[in-house]
Length: 405
Image (cartoon, rainbow, N blue to C red; front, side, top):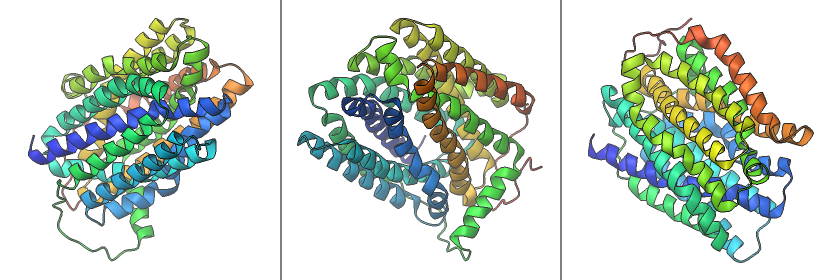
């Protein structure tokens, strides 16, 4: 791995630490204002709405401009949003509207940053090392966002509610300083087509590619069930497992126990059983995790279930990211990623609203059973689609998707 990748990895690690802090501190802040399930899930909607509105535009822009400069500007914008929120909270003047607004602005910036980041990575490391690189990035996510940040966020929030948000702001200032040194070495080109035409080209390319189309639709469905569950986790942890802020953070950290192993083993698992079988196994483990959380009545059981979830989710994430990057030509990479991200976030936004509605209408456990049933249906429908097939890197100017139907 070269120096440019090391800077990207460091930026990813620092940003994941900051994201992990507010991932826990955000719901805790909402609960300090209200315990209404719809209001709690509303914070996740505020984070997902920018992707639904702007991700395709962000992808088209990232395929036109210097991606590292774009990442730097986005990181600094997020730093400002979280910094303002932190200072207002420290002054005791924050309310639910300001919390939603700050998370919305930060999510806009993160949408731009993540699109550019995903497109830059394949230009920094050789195709043969993409699985390893994505595994290392997923491991950083497990360690910093899922393991280290949640208990730290719970502890900091208990001392000073503004602290996690101020530290997140500082983390993204550092991210901006790191990514500016990763130079975008693509040839300088000026597109003669419109932004709308560029977006349409990315959408057409994704939906004409058999495997990537199936993957995008599957992630859409998976995220409906997953986010319906995760949007209610703060209430499930408090009311069913009787844990406070620190315990809630520790439950998130248990994801990392399996997540680190899953991310580091992703490349080995793909070599051993093939990408398709890694995806199949992940879907089965998904169902098992939801059922275990629904039936368990102790925080230890929840921790074990989340550890299992972390193991498979990081392997799934690294494997599917590598598939998209390998199969997509560089000139289209950010746009195809943005189209995939749109479907992913649309499912997550629907799941957030659905989770709150199901928990309000029935019980807090209803979203878990719903997610298990939905994922089971997905397994039945897509099982034969994840067959093994040879993967080849596209040529730099490739426009015709492999595996098109």
